[in-house]
Image 1 (cartoon, helix red, strand yellow):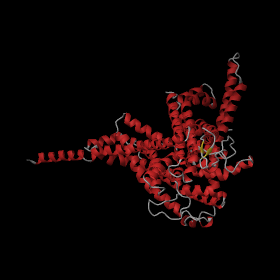
Image 2 (spheres, helix red, strand yellow; image 1 turned 90 degrees about the vertical axis):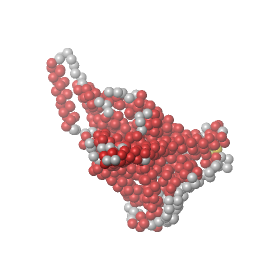
Image 3 (cartoon, chains in turn yellow, orange; image 1 turned 30 degrees about the horizontal axis):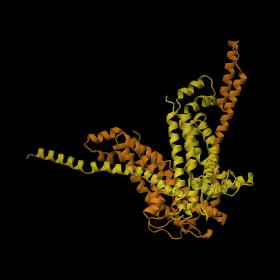
Image 4 (cartoon, one colour; image 1 turned 90 degrees about the horizontal axis):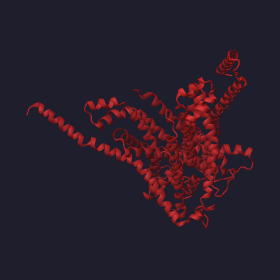
Length: 307
Length: 314
C-alpha cells in the first residue's frame, strides 16, 4: 500500500469518526434543550389544571361565582368575584394612566421630537421599564399613597387607586415604545405626501399615521392590559388584602395575583381546599393573560396594513 | 416659539396673500389656517409634557428612595446580618442569597437558552415544530411571574421536595428568564453572516464544528448581552420567590444551595410590609433598593458596553 491511499484512508476514517460522534449527537442535544421550554408550558398547564380540578370538585360553582371570599374562616367560602373586581379596577386605573400618557409620548417621540431629542429622551424613559416591580410597590405605598391622602382624606393606607396609578406609570414605556415602533413603520412617503398637501404635523399624525399604525397601537394597549393583570408586587404591597366585594377604589382591594402571594406566604398547608384555590385563581389568571395575548397577536396580524 | 413654527407662519401668510391676489374668487380662510397651526403647536407642547411626566416620575422615584436611604446605607448595613432591630439590621445574608441564586440561574439559563437558539436557528428545518417552539417561547415570555411561582411551588417545592431552598428558587427563576436568553441569542446567531458558515463548510468543517468555532464566537457579544439582561430581570424579581414560601426572618447565612434563604427583593418586600409597626423599616427598604438599583445599573452598563464594543458589523 502506498502513502497516498493510506492518507486517503485516514481522511475517510476521520470523516467517518466525526460524523458518528459529536456532529450527530449535538442536534439531538439541542432539540432536547429546546424542548425544555415546551415542557415548561405543559408543566404550567398541567399543575394549574390538576390542582384547580381538585378545587372545583370540592367547591360548587355557585360558591365560586359568589361575592363572599373567606378562605381562612371556620366556615370557608371561595367566592372569586372580589378578586376579579380588584383586578379589573386596578387594571382600569393603570390603563387610564398608561394609555393617554404612553400614546402621546409615542406621538411626540415619533412625530414631533428631533432625532437628537429622541436619542436622549427614549433611553431615559425606558429606564422606567427596567426598574423591578418591588421598587414600584415601595414607591406606591410610601410615597404615592401619602401624597394622594392629602387630596382625598378618606383614602385608606391600602387602596386600589395608588397601585393602579403606579402600575400605569410602570407600563408607560411599554405602550410608548410599541406604539412608537408602529408609527415609525408607517412609510415616510405617506407622511410627506400629507405634509406636502399643507397638513400640519398634528393633522398628519391623526389622519395619516395613526390610522395606518392602528393595529400596532391597539396591540400595544392590549399587551399593556395583560401586563397590568399579571402584575403582582405593586398591588400586593399597596392594595392590601381586603376580601370585601366593593368598587370603592379608595379602599383596599385584593387582586388575583395578590391573593396568590398572600395565601402562599401565609403557609397554606398542602392538600387543603385553600391550597388548591391558589391554583384555581392561577388558572384563571393564566387563561386571562393568555387569551389577551392571543387577541393582541390576532389584532396585529389581522389589521396590519401592508405597504 | 421655535424657528420652525415661525417659518410655517410666515410662509403660510405669504402664500395666502399670493393666492388671494392671483385668484380673487378663491378665498383662503386665513383664520382657519391660523387656528390649525395654533392647535398643532398647542398639542405639540401637551405631547411633550407627557414624555416629561414619565421622566419626572423617574426622577422623583430615585430622589425619594435616595433621600430615605441616607444615613442607613453604610458598610455596616452591607456586612451585618438581619436583625429585628432596625439599627442593627444588615443585608449581608440577602446579598449572599441573591449571589447564590444567580450562580444557579446563569449557567442553567445560558445552557438552555443558547442551545434552544442554536437549535432554532442552525438545525431546525422550517416547519411546524420550529413554529411551535417559537410561538411557545413568545407565549412563555408573557406569562405572569407569579404563575411561574406556582409552577415552582408545585414541581420543585413539593414534588421534588426542595422546599423553599436556593435550588428551588434558582430553578424557578431560570425558567422565568429563559425566553429572554433565547430571543437575544436567536438574534445574535441570526446576525452571523451566512458567508462565514459557508467558508467554514468549504474548509471541510462539519456542522457542529462550524457552530462551535464560527457561529458561537461571533455571536458571543449578543449572547452575553442577553444573559446579563436576563440576570438583571432575575435579580429584581420577587413574586415567584414569595410564592415559593420563603420565610420572613432568616438569621442564618446560607451555606449550601439546599438552605433556606432570603434575597434582596424579598428583604425589600418584608421590610415594606412591616413599616406599619416599625417606621424605620422604610429606611431599610429604601437602602436595600439603592443597593439593588446600583447592581442593576452596573449590569446594564456592562451589557451596553459589551454590545457597543464587541459587536462586529458585517
